[in-house]
Length: 231
Ligand SMILES: C[S@@+](CC[C@H](N)C(=O)[O-])C[C@H]1O[C@@H](n2cnc3c(N)ncnc32)[C@H](O)[C@@H]1O
Image (spheres, rainbow, N blue to C red):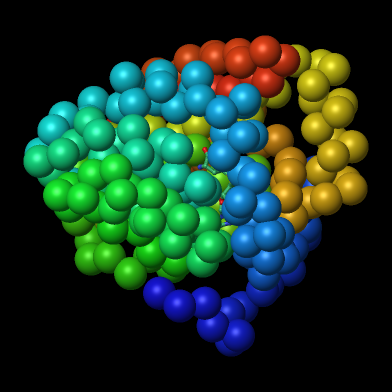
């Protein structure tokens, strides 16, 4: 779905939330700008959690798999590699990120059924119950609380009954890291967002997901949590 200038960037007034309003337009611009160098950050901080997320996702070759917010496509390529007889669809708000992801996957897996689009997680252009599995890594930090609910409801809608949802968030279990993240998030909210991991299981349950497992991962000083849920 193309981004429209008419999107409702509604204001959310939740006092403990460090993203009081939707900043999707800024996030899109920032991630467009960093798309060329972003693979380095994924390699340094996200690759271990990506590997574990794939291991626990229950994804088997032949499934219909959706990845939300692919970034520069490192997890997406893992998914396509694991699902070469199935169909793997990805999307990202940033057109440059999604184009880069599509280009690389076409080069590496020319015969795979894989597509990547520039789409907003809040408004997915897929029919109900299209996918067997949905994967989403490090997106919720960038969304306001209202937008998190819109996105989770969309993931729930496009997932088939008993389908799996695998979610990776930045962990909140390291004090020094948390303090540094708060500073970074204040300086550049559209890039860093804010940590939400502690609130996520409750949000998932209120969107009718059943959380089945939660794993802590650490890559150097960078903490992540991998959550598994079922519709
Ligand atoms: C922190 S990066 C994570 C990228 C990748 N998932 C990873 O694990 O490395 C967050 C990504 O979310 C995308 N994003 C932010 N808001 C979005 C939205 N509303 N819909 C879709 N993607 C969004 C950004 O463009 C960016 O590529």
